[in-house]
Length: 144
Image (cartoon, helix red, strand yellow):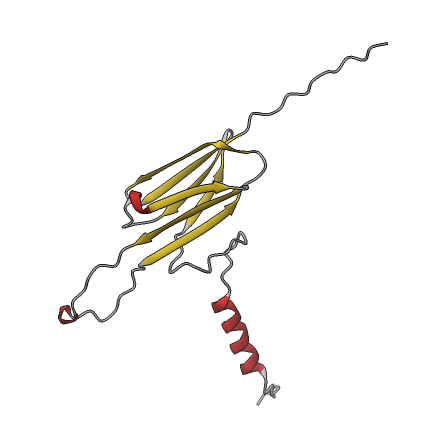
């Protein structure tokens, strides 16, 4: 028989960690989503002349999606309306998410706010952010 160490506070510590994790509203990129009912999955890709954000937003009408750029932050928000369900239909479980969503992304200095476009196709939102043209070095002549 092996000996086990008894740690009376380990269950409370584990519960605290789980509660902290459940209440943590930051995403992996550090943005806040505290006002969201659900969070759409997002892919971010850097291309030669632009950045591409692809978000899965199934069931959301493109007119219900807002994309804003302000002070180097790109915001995507909207709302997915819940279907009206009658009790007699016999639903045992509802896993599809409804309600508002809100995602914010910090853009790099190379992003050009004037070159942002968004389109939605079959529940996938694509936001393309153009990059600024590289500033070419300028030779300055020295006069004598």
